[in-house]
Image (cartoon, rainbow, N blue to C red; front, side, top):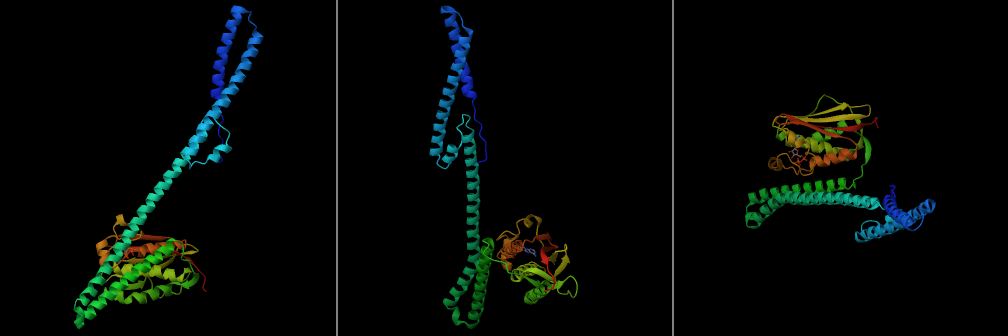
Length: 349
Ligand code: ADP
């Protein structure tokens, strides 16, 4: 403990002074009535008397307070009694005050933390159950209908089995997202950093999502034609997941006949800024701060219809932060959104 405790002699000194003054008056009176007053004798007597009472008082009070403080330490067993043993005994209670205050503030922080964790855990379990319930009940509904006779009708059989299959795909997606986010949050997921071409990665995501975009007549494009290869440093698989989630969102929350545009610009000598801009639904300002929280949706009913679990952006943020990079969002309701992130440049492989 780096705290220096003040040893106070004030109490004993003042008390000894009062007693000595009283003794001196008594002695002077006795001498006055029965003997001649001897100044030297009186002075020595008062001095010896003062010293004696000072030491007796100081020692007694220290012992007295020490025993009581020790008792408090023993009763409140969380306080460290050895701390007291190592300290000079004080009469001003500073040690105890310091320890009790420290203990109280540590406990307060601990309790607050436990409350937050408990709330977080409760919310998380609630959200997981909620997310799993919808596809699970859907699958159960189709299978029950089939079992109740629908299986005999060839068209219903095919239709319902397809729908049940989609429901199971959705369940798998949610479980995979949960698995990924748990690994990211517990730092279990190690980055496999390598040099790769980010333009080629975008192109492969464009190819993968082309059909989905076509259904809404959304064009996926770069802001300029014929980007040459641009090399970056990062975990290719994870950055692929980031790009996939962001482009997928731009389609899911994009308007018919819209566009999703990707731009790759130099931010500094070492960093690139990658922007994914859409002209879709946009996001209200009040949601922006919470957008990257897990399970957060701006409009849960609409997002759920579209098929999101609300985990995509929190996975994106975790991955970007694991790379020690940053992600930003700008959006205007009804106009569109822009998600951008930084990434380290690399020389050609
Ligand atoms: P989800 O799985 O629901 O898509 P995300 O974490 O990816 O979850 O996104 C969280 C919410 O942010 C979405 O539910 C949606 O409301 C909003 N959002 C994300 N991207 C966009 C976008 N490009 N345009 C408009 N809203 C978006």
